[in-house]
Amino acid sequence: MRPKRILDGDGHVIERDAELFEYLEAPYAKNTSLLGYPFFPTLDGYSRGAIIARMGLYADYNITSQNWLDTLDKMGIESTVLYPTAGLSFTTIQDTRWAIALARAYNDWFHDRYYRKSKRLRAMALIPLQSVPEAVKELRRAVTELGAVGAVLPANSADVGVRQLLGHPDFWPVYEEAERLNVPIATHGAPSMNLGINSMIHFAATQALEHPISQMIQLTSFVMEGVFDRFKTLRVGFLEAGTGWVPYMIDRLDRAYSGWAGKEVREYSSFMKTSPSDVFKSGRLYFSCEGGEPSMRTLIDRIGSRNIIFASDYPHESNVERAMHEVDELMSRDDLTDEARQNIFCDNIERFYAR
Image (tube, rainbow, N blue to C red):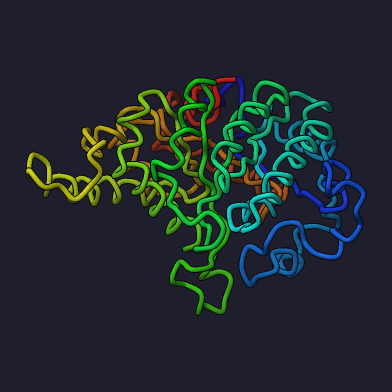
C-alpha cells in the first residue's frame, strides 16, 4: 500500500558563491575580492562536478527552488528538508569570523531563495560550531526568524576547523538550545579527508566509506559522551550512510559499555548512564535508508521501524529518475509492512523534524 503522503527527509541545494555573496554582511558585503576564492573548503580531492559529468546524469545542473518544486510534483512528494552541498565542508573552516558570516549568509540566502518561494522547501541551517555562543545564536535566529527546522552538523572536520567530536561537552549549549526549540540536529557526511582512506584513487571506493566511517565516529561520540542521557528529548539524525552499519554499532557499543558498567573506574563519560542498546531504542536517533539495502530489515527487527527515514538525496548522484527508482524499491519490498512504509515515508520524518 502506497502511503497517502510522501515526505523527503534529506535533499540538497546547490549553493553558488555568487548568490551567497549578495547576502554577506560587513565587512564582506560588496567586496568582490571574495569571489576570487571558494567560499567553502573543498570536500576532499575529488571534484563532484567532474564525477557527475562523467555519469551523464544532467544536461543542466542549475538546481533552483522552482526546479525543486517541479521535482517534488513529478515524484508525488509533499515537501522536502534541504541540506547544503558545498556547505558539508563547513566545519573545516578555520577562520571563525568567516564561518559566522558565511553561516548567516547561507541561512538568509535559503530563506530568501527557497523558503519564501514555498514552505514545501525547508532548511536545515548551518551554524558556526567554531564559536559555540554564535552557533547557539544562529540556531535560534534560523529557527525563530527564518523558518529552519533544525541544524546540520557536518560529520567530518578532517582535523581542521572544528577539531572536537560532536559529542564533546563544548557543544552542549547547542544541544540545549535545540532541545529548548524542539528542533533536531543532523550529522551529514561528505568530506573523506583524514578518515584513513586518503590513499584511495577511485571515487567509488571513497564514496562507499566516507559517509559510514564519519557517522560511526560521531555516533560513538554522542553515545559514549552521554549526550542522550544529558538531553532527554534531543533528536539526532545520522544521514546518507544507509542502515546496515547501525546494528553492528549497537553491538560494538554495548560490548564497550558492558565491560566497564558498574565498575569503580569506567572508560566512558561519567554522564553516560544508559546502555547503548537502550539509547537506540529510545526513538531519538534517526537514520536515512537506501531503497534496496537488505540489511534494513535487520535494523527493523532490532529497534523497529520508527527510526528510519526516506531521503531522496536529489540532486546529488541521483537525478529525478534515480530518485523515483529509490521510491519504487521501497514501495515494492515484500519484507516491509504497510506500517513500516508509512513510518519511513511520512510519520518518522514528521516526528524527527517536528515542524
